[in-house]
Length: 102
Length: 91
Image 1 (cartoon, each protein chain N blue to C red):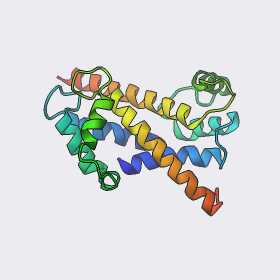
Image 2: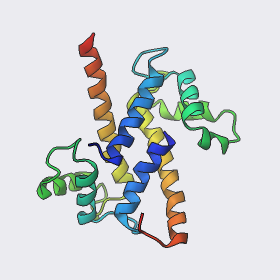
Image 3: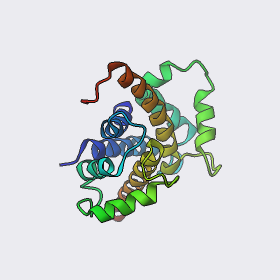
């Protein structure tokens, strides 16, 4: 029986590989695949973005080895950035509610 | 994906119980309850202490959220590579 955290990690891996296999190399995301992934899977987050070049900027930031595609390790940086933003928001909420019985 | 990120964050926050960092005992509980299928040795307190020491970049004896995410990212990358090589075996 996988735990909640293990299930979440599995889900992130499955999302990456679901979008990564269509064009370019099979284990990486092209710019187009990344855009489609973000539009489908991060729609709540993108709604708060006003910048139309946001996805391109994310792509440039994530592509650490400069090959024009995003591999899973580079994708993890996106997850890390979003998780840090998410943690900051939840910490504020928790402080307001003053309840630690999650 | 948004739900998965929320889960990753909430597991840390519920283990930290309002503090900025995870102490040794809470980190051990988190590893045992949430990573028992991925990691061997989660029942060994010395192995978990060794893992915590390896994660603890600033050597303050605690695990910060950033350090926790390093562990999650490392494990997810390892799992992803296992799946990729598994698919190669099938071809």
